[in-house]
Amino acid sequence: MHAVVRRYSGPGASELFEEFERKHGSVEATLEQAMRGVPGFVAYTLVRTQEGGVSVTICRDKASTEKSVQVARDWIRQNLQASANPPEVLDGDVLLQFS
Image (tube, rainbow, N blue to C red; front, side):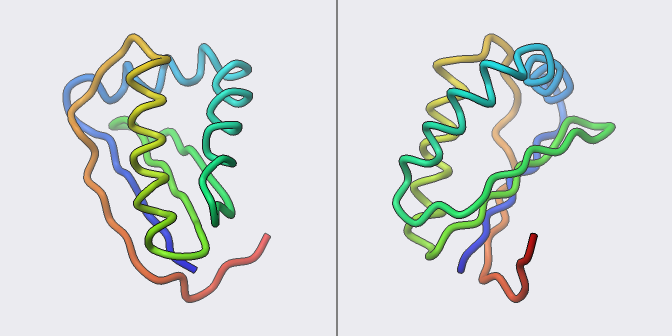
């Protein structure tokens, strides 16, 4: 499995995550549907931080995580008004994952 972490900070990051919070119900329904459309998708988590937030996506392989980054970016552009600097993106092989 492969994971990608997107860290949003700097100008606009707090506003972006405030909008995620305000639109929680519609975000959950539509973003979940978009992410589940990515072949190999396993899990998605959105975390609020003091400086903005992070998202963590786990997929079965690197190609799927790359696709998930594109899907998430497109979804944000199409569905949220707030904009932020591009996120810092970290990715790597999953060593341990359970829920």
